[in-house]
Image 1 (cartoon, rainbow, N blue to C red):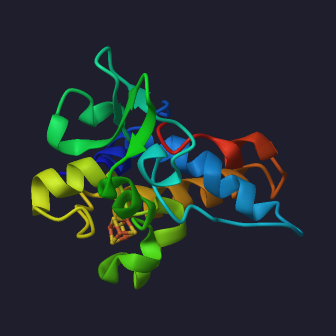
Image 2 (cartoon, rainbow, N blue to C red):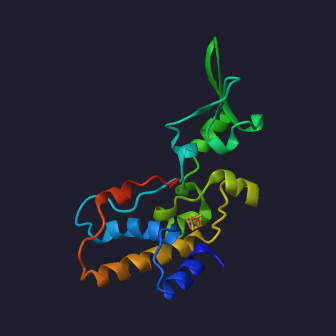
Length: 171
Ligand code: SF4
């Protein structure tokens, strides 16, 4: 049973609590009130691709992701007294977005998902460009359903602020 199925059962019992589906519902609520501007735009999953953050360990090794720190084979660079050196893996990580993932680019929830965690995908499938959905599609769809139900319950009122759309992909 994935998170989406579990959430359905919990909601059927009349219990409304914060969990992956309700967090997704907040994101989807943003869409319902969108009259202009940008909608879903999560083309990648996290810092590993976006690369606006690097992890530096005490030895000067650089990693693209907290999950990979301590595994030298996954270093994306190294910093030393002579400067910063980046390794080829850094450029590989830059290309991990849904446009380069055959299954994701055809997926209806791709722009709400971003292709999931590259580290986990590589661990499960052996290829970081091959997704490990792990029920996330159902979770996103259940979140959409919940957002719509809440919108109906509120008479179509706008109930969620714009900030929901900027929630971190790691949340
Ligand atoms: S649900 Fe699966 S196939 Fe769809 S975008 Fe996410 S990881 Fe890719």
